[in-house]
Length: 202
Image (tube, rainbow, N blue to C red; front, side, top):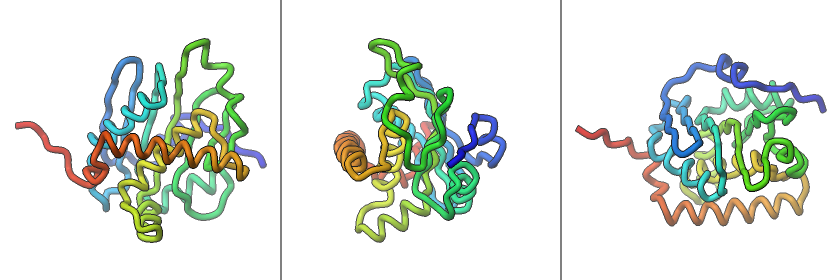
């Protein structure tokens, strides 16, 4: 299958940004966009959780965009860049040279070799999370939609690190890593606070 190469300007120009929370820490930058305005999401809390995930993954540097989108936008991205019909829960775009978009499969971690020097772990990419899918999956599995969103965030970040879910053994390995990271983040944060508006100091 042929997948088009994607760059930041392609994604940025394809949709309108409605709300954003940006934060720079250490040598990392995290941008969180809520492009699905029907569901109130605490962007400050989402950014804090993303920052904690970067720390859990022991990354030295990261430039990460997290986009919370609806069914229509994720379907367009899925069909245009992955050539898959319909909606999906999460799509990851890795901006390292020569890495295709991933709604699922990249092979191993070989693509990291050229950009991560000894003792260095750095990422540059975007994760698109479908809020509508999180709501539907939470109803289906009896979980909270906020936990589903964080699971999708973790899944996308693991793809940026080279995890692959194309085969059963790789899927099991990735799921174990997702579960472990979700438990760690749930101990540090009340994930239910994702739905609460951020309090603005007076």
